Image 1 (cartoon, one colour):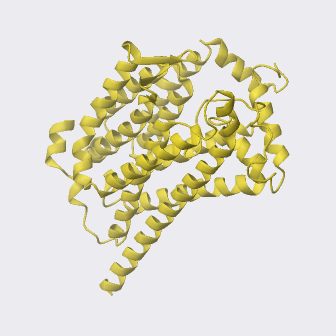
Image 2: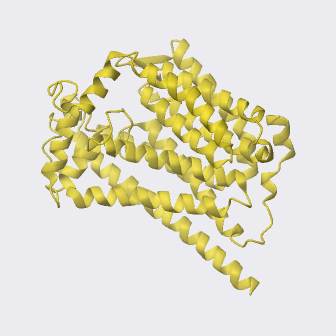
Image 3: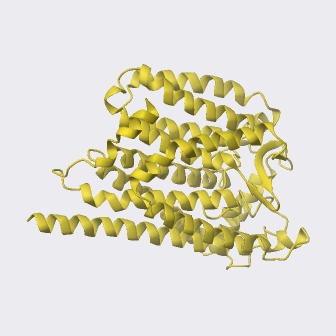
Amino acid sequence: MMENQQAENKFSSFTLLFLLIAVLLLLLATGLASLYSASYDKAMRLGLQGDYFFRRQFLFSLAGTAAAVVIFSLPVRMIRLLIPLVLVGSMILMLLTLFTSLGETQLGARRWITIGSIGFQPSELVKVSTILFLANYFDKHQDQLRQFSYIIYPAAVVGAFALMIFMQRDFSTTVIFLIVCFSLFAASGTKLSYLAYLAALVGIPGILLLFTESYRVRRLIGFLFKDFDPSGINYQVNASLMAVRSGGLMGKGWGNGEYKYGLLPEVQSDFIFASFVEETGFIGGLFVLLLFGMIAVTGFYGAARLRDHDRFLHFLGIGVTSLIVFQAYMNIGVVIGVFPPTGIPLPFFSQGLTSLIVNLGMGGLLGKVLAASGKYRNPNAEKSPDSNLDLQEVLYE
């Protein structure tokens, strides 16, 4: 009986992992094909080779895939030992971006460190390193989280990073970062009253800060009133909606879209989903939605199976899954007019080297969660020894 249970656990774990790998490969392949079609004309208009954006994205997809394999191969103990280094490294990179000549300003936002022709966006790394930090901290202090004093330290770390992201004039990334972190605080069992304090502490200033920049106010007004400034602030969203509608049920065929020829700004980046739906139709858009939905189902299901046995991987699975899926649906919501414009890229689709590598790396972390989930499906399974590391007590006390 026990042997049958173990075989079932391994099979189920393998099934979840295989499903995740298949979904990630489908998203990556679909995203590369979509980027090639959407960006060809844009590259030519910039005086570049037509496949410029595609070639760069393809090369970095290979680097990201290699990173995912390495991360998946690392023992959990090693990942946990690396967390302080990754967290401090992320903070140093953010400070270098903000306060040194290494930081590059584009369109009024100082978000990149550029080396040669390659730009790196440290805030992408910050999101993952903070998830790792919170997962580790909540595991180590699970029994003390009913005390407010144990909430202050992780909240301060999250607040410091959120402030640095906001100082880079990246309000939308700040919001997503805080929402994902808040979801981990909630999943950790933090008392509802403490969650309310944190929500008020962040939410009230956040709403006030929303109105400190005129462009954010104009975006909000444009979202609420679709006829406001149709040739200005609302042009991009209106063009996106027209592209989506023109695709109909089956689309115009890959490569046959028209809005990518200068009618849809940032077609290779934030609004690539509109070009994709124009060419593949409602069916293609639904296919992508379902793929991200499958990441949500497998990720949250695998994390839930680890709740009572390996809390670090449990929290890690929740955080990584939330970040990937929330960014995807937020981007798609902007494209179809459900959310105001945010500047959030579509994972695995939008042109962006840092985002692509980080998302693939998160795929490696999520794969590790799913691979471990079968081991602890049996309710009598012993708790993972990795969830109680003496060295972590030294690092995080």
